[in-house]
Amino acid sequence: MIAIMKRELSAYFRSPVGYVFIAVTFLCSGFFFWLFTLSVGGTDISSVFLGMFFAYMIFVPVLTMRLLADENKQKTDQLLLTSPISLIGLVAGKFLSAYIVFILGDIVMLSYGVVLSFFVTVNWALILGNFVALALIGAVFVSAGMFVSSLTESQMVAAIGSIAINVALFLMNVIASVIPVTFISDIIRSISIYDSYSEFTTGIFSLTGVVFFLSIAAVFLFFTVRVLERRRWA
Amino acid sequence: MIEVRNLTKSYGPKKAVNDISFKAEDGQVLGFLGPNGAGKSTTMNILTGYISSTSGQAFINGVDILEDPIKAKSFIGYLPEQPPLYYDMTVNEYLDFVYSLKKCKLPKKSHLNEICSIVKLDDVRKRLIKNLSKGYKQRVGFAQALVGNPKVLILDEPTVGLDPKQIIEIRTLIKRLGKNHTVILSSHILPEVQAVCDRIVVINKGRIVANDNADTLARNLSNDHKLIMHIEGSSDEIKKLLSSVTDVERVFVGRQIDERVWEYHVEAKEGVDVRRDIFKKLAARNYPVLMMKSNELSLEEVFLKLTTGDEYGGAEKIEDTYDMLTKGGEEK
Image (tube, rainbow over all chains, first blue to last red; front, side, top):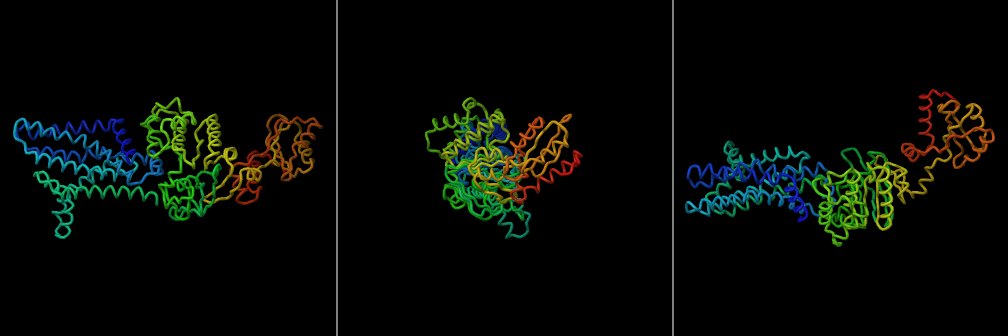
């Protein structure tokens, strides 16, 4: 697992992908910070984070599209799958490498709180709540992206597919609201990532929310392991 | 040691590998010979745990690859048909990665140095893999298989795409490694398998058609009693002369090579070497022999021979077609 993680991490920074992801994330969150707080003289940090929520729906797939699709294409999966490592270790290593790059881009958001603290008394609970929520959303997006990447040989397909999944996850509560059957709409609403996300942004640290996001991520990681395993049996 | 029992792999109704069994002992080089699409790569992918079999078992050093894949895989070094290389890494970085991926316990620096000198990679270790030539890429793939000094080496067409000098180097290397590893290599080139392997398994359309010692198989497949000759002189007289040699069964005249030079196909009784007699007869009558060689079997003929047991079956058809094409028209 460690070996895989190290290789993937170094691959991110051997190609422009890692740098571009971090740079664009910095740029984007900086822009939202200026737009929602500095330019209007406000302290609405939640909007900055929400803006990044949407940005990550598109950015994270770019980070994850390569993870397994490229292995499938270059046939390097033959090396990984015939090495004495477990599939879980392989998938976990890949996930961690992408997640570390994600966090490297995301962590800059905390500094906006520091900037604000020069002007006003900052509600750190709110900022940390937002930050944790976004970090959990990142875990969901990374695992979903990796899952789609395992299904295809094409990075393009992987990217578009994972954007679609991210948008679908986000729209769950909208879908739920148009379904007339309460029973079904309740189920769909319960897997809405946006509802759980917004709970955090009020500064409430919800354990249910943490478990919810981590289990969605775990489900996608599990699916990824299954996809790799299924290929063996096909 | 590798043991395969009744291995079958189906893709839908099609059986890529159909009920094959064989065994490779320690210190043995086993050659897997077959045309493209015979099931060689499929078998190797099953042996290495990349894909699973539909039924049957494969044991690597006594460990079932399906029961305990991680342990079984730790005995294997695998060079797939297309070397699994990360083009964005240098050779050193790549081998480091494989070293930790395989959880290798040997002293890292000296082990990797040793491997690189075995496969002659010393000069390119700091270069990016994507910038290497095909031959070097193949060697990096080979080096990767050797990391951790695995007991079993599985090599899928290791010499494809290499130049003749590299092919000889790789063959020598395989022979050397075969002394203390179990090696399985696949190929669709008969002389290659003959050159390096102790034992040959011939596979066609997913089935084993022969499984024998290299020497025995080579003897069975040899074709010394069939000669192709170029002789200068009147074709009618030479044909009569050749036919009169003891044990020669059939002679037919092929295409004209040059003015007064014709090609002759001579078939003697099986197992009889008539080359000396023919030479003496021709020399006595002053007919210069410009070329004489035994008619080697093509891989297709090998399969025909092994599958039908009728050695003329394929050859005759080929000669008939040949007659038609050249409009030689001579009766046999």
